[in-house]
Length: 459
Image 1: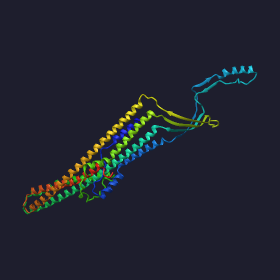
Image 2: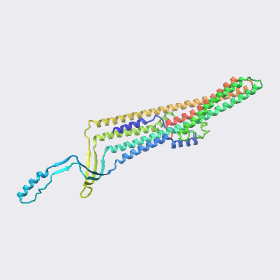
Image 3: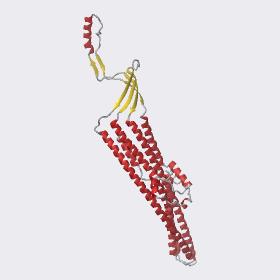
Image 4: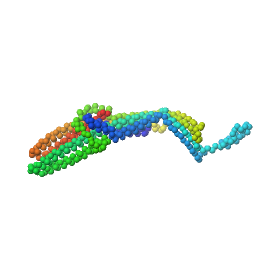
């Protein structure tokens, strides 16, 4: 009983606060294909599948207890020394029988009875038998089978939680990889602009229109962008390695890019109360708690049955038994019907019933807590997406303004109407605005995926 309760408590501790994942509503056959590969090959998910297989075998073992147990148990004993049974039966009976023969004038009574001097440990003795045991009624077997079924349901719900979390992780990892590609492209474009600036300044210096520091300043800006580009390239390789890790592929395997994915933003979000209700219906964490709660309630019934209902079993032994392996006149058969009923065990059973009820109450409280946590997660994801959408609109406007300003300054500088410091300033502003917009665009996709994960879309 204590082992069952510990197992139920272990299941309740396994309940993750992470949510089931779904990709953003933006359709992408490439991303969908990667998600399928990840669900088929991810090592963490394979571990969960193996755990389900292990629990399934526990269920099969519990089911096997409903069948009779048949065993073949031959034994053969050799003995020497030890205690002996010494009884002077001859000394007691021979004189009496002799007197009876004399009185009756006959020899009907034997007078040569030997005294008994026999080893207590049997020598050259065998017991070759087949034993059959069958539980006619056993509450432990019945309720343990039900508990194992509920444990299996809980483990299956746990696997779906991990599966959906993996789907979310693959989706966001893919978005992050696309964002690193975007960052590399932005820095490369900035490097190209600054290189063009350096060449222009070199021509101006050679024509004595500008001084030499304009060239060195441009080259310094190029070195800064090269440093940022190196970091962006490192981030790109790291993001690709992490994405391949989730798919259990070679870490440097190429990743196919869906160039249209980041250009189509998610549609407007639904009503918050409706999303919360959808999450409460679909989240596998609640299914996992429900299965654990069912196992705890069954454990209460088991404890109560053990306190009130006896166990009944049927057994039989048949075979051969005797001295020497002769099998002649040694056959025997023993059948038994037994009943086991613990009438008093120092209030242990009462304590087990109370313990099981406490565990049930704890899981009911846990269920309410998980419900509240899910509602909170949906609310946070909802407003995170709202904030990300507003941030995207702001960065979009900022990028357009920075780009237009830079084009004006670029034209003025080439016509000698602007200073180099102004050109570099607005070029940096344009670079920053492009990076912010790229991050904001990806953040909207990630936040939409997070909301779908919280709502458990598609489960």
